[in-house]
Length: 274
Image (tube, rainbow, N blue to C red; front, side, top):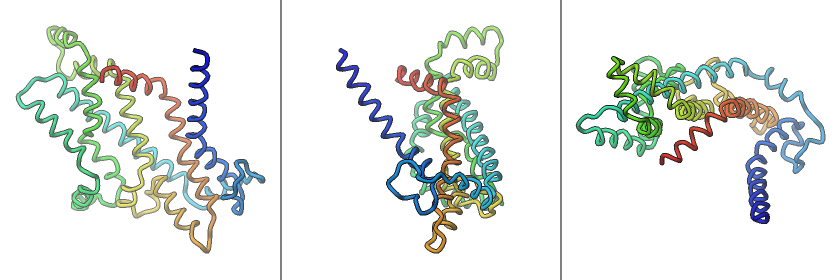
């Protein structure tokens, strides 16, 4: 038993080191002078803390950070709210064709994003919003098939007798959702929120398509602009780009550690019900 425990800890430690190494390398490279970025040393021979000051001087990083925060929060809040409403409807109400309609919702997950990219762009362009930040989050007002599926499984696990008793006491359908279902499924809602926050924060494709004004750039879009500027053959300053990558990664790590307890609870609860 002891040997198995030691082997398990060795494997877990090896996996942890394997997953942490890319971030450690990124952090180390962002603190190296330009000529040492791609050497084999894990720790810098010379600590170049000025790289982070240089990136703040080279680009409006503060504005990009605020844009990313605003867009990511808007995307996460809207998709969590709308998906939970739809999921609760599929879980609570009994109506003809419910399963077929739910299957149709799930079928939208089979569509690659590239298939709908041009039609969606034309819709936003016809609305006069193609070059604003609105398309980066407003599509979530219609929910997401993945989060609807995830949340529906949690809502189905709630005792129906609780809702029936509340209906007898005169509770409305909104009260059933907001006062009963939402508090009981808080871990699942936090999982959906964190997933979407991460996806929106690190998204590069949509900002590349819709954003033209540098003042509206999110961090990934701004980092791409920095990469184009400092990654060219005549002006290679990869330490600046890597410092920007660290600034993009750290907020997600903070969010995960703050929501870790609820996040892991939501994942483990979902696995038990699956």
